[in-house]
Image (cartoon, rainbow, N blue to C red; front, side, top):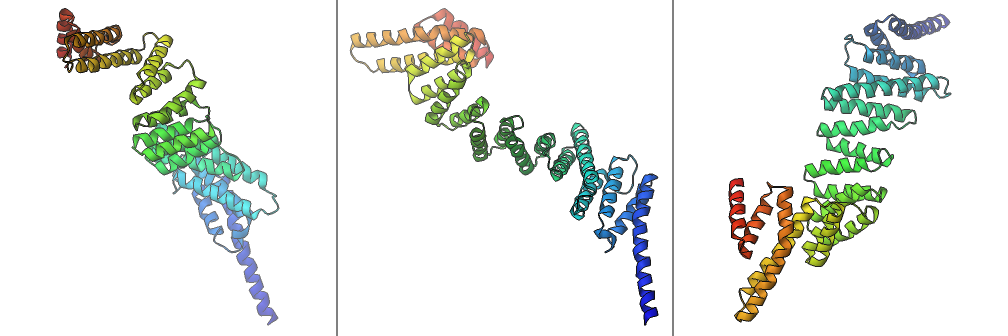
Length: 377
């Protein structure tokens, strides 16, 4: 019996030694550049119950697959898979290295994989292979995470590549990670909102902007994005409050004053609308939008007054009402003419001037403007 036991023990020792030899062979063939052989040896070693629990087996495997990832030769596995396997192997090595004896080497392996993944991602992105670029950037972010780092470049680029790859789930995930890390402040929220806007995902757009506003309440761009939502959806009271907040931070922003004028116009508060348009023009005297809107506001008032005058039966009262309407048209005229001067192709300005000249009896100007308008159609 003793002899039998001795034989069994000796056999087990030989098997264990053979498996350890696989690890050694993997390393030696790696050192000689025979990565296909090295991969074969090391992949066999991780299936054996003895060597699969040895930190060295997995650390070697991480290094072997890392070499395959950077090699220009074909060793039977693509670059992305090789990098994934390398990262998994270092993770397993770290798990088995309970005394942290090899933590420096393992972390160096992670750091190298992180750099490789980002570089491969940039190359794929430049080649417009966005799905592959996304995958590499995510690998880079994960490799950094494994050593307690946050790779802002990898995370942000993962979002950009995912958006280009039409992968909205990952784009949103990594834009938010980038924003919450403080990278580029609130801009990742803007990029995510733009993505939702292009996809006509209105609820997601507003939720993203509001989350951005919560984290970056002073970000003027996020304020404007929220404003645009309110304006597009006819929520003018919310827009008014939003604009007042924005103007506290940017009192010389002509666009904000113009937008507030639009809001007041829609709320039926003509006096405040005029005040806001004029403020925008004080900042930029050749601002077309404010110039045209101010002229259009006066013109519309004049048209309304003129229509009411037509219902008046008393001649004296009628003449007075028509005179008052003409006075308003006179206020509109210089702004509409200035708008046409600033942009001679704008059909709205030409149409308004054509009607205005007809109503105030300026026949020659009417004829010229009508011809221009017809030529532009």
